[in-house]
Image (cartoon, rainbow, N blue to C red; front, side, top):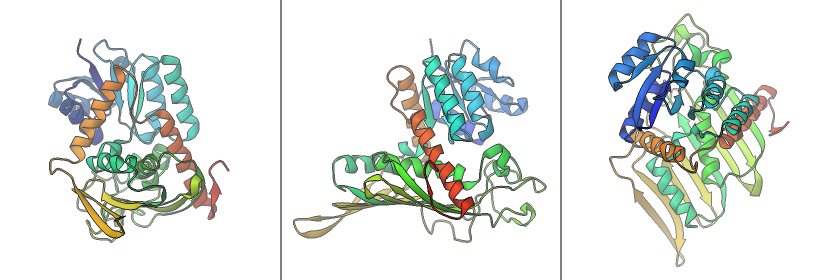
Length: 357
């Protein structure tokens, strides 16, 4: 029997997942969305069935696994329902709205015995896979400082809709792009324990929505009469065990021209240093060899990008469902949520906080 995957959420990211499943040789058997017209459109594109009731999809015989790609407030309840219905789950980031909800999802996974993978797709970028090989080969040595950046000029998604309504999203750019940065850097650095956090958030561009100027919009069109109760910029420093410091910078909107600074990761180690744009075409490393300072450029194939990362994510999910799970775990998702919570607490308090304060 074919391994059938149903997708909850027929919006932009749901369709990206559908293409990733197809590229990985999988079968999209259904789309579910409260807007049945959107579900029908997506289902027609991928030769699938449309549902408007998630429980009906979860209990349908052709559905073996589920991708959950909906507003953040629905992540945990839908993941729990899917797992309890006997489905393996790929859950988009952030894992939930808070740490307590993450634990509810983990408990449901453990009770059901099903697979839970969190959608940290940046781990599957070709640059990241290449960087990991160099790190595992010891070419950087002990990493003592890391920096990760994702800056957009005009990138507020779904302005005036759920993305910018804190009651639906849990936050703004920090909970949207932040999970990618936090998970990626922690993973490349060996998952060190984060001990203390100092963060600042800002909201300069989206409020009021009527004044925001843009060229295109993910999850648009905007609702200019809708809410904007979230952050659109954030910066943080994480103090970790083993004397590792991590700097994070992210913004949905700024006046910085696109492409000035790529979605970059910089790692400084005792034996070498590395920088790469997550979606770039090379990695740059610096080291010392036989007493000489040496620069190394590791090229990435031109065929690599966003699409191949989603393909690998779904190849990983499919093989995990058929054997031993080896993708981003629910525990990693909860860890990232813990750091996010501390970052928001720090920003609200205007001071550094402990990870468990």
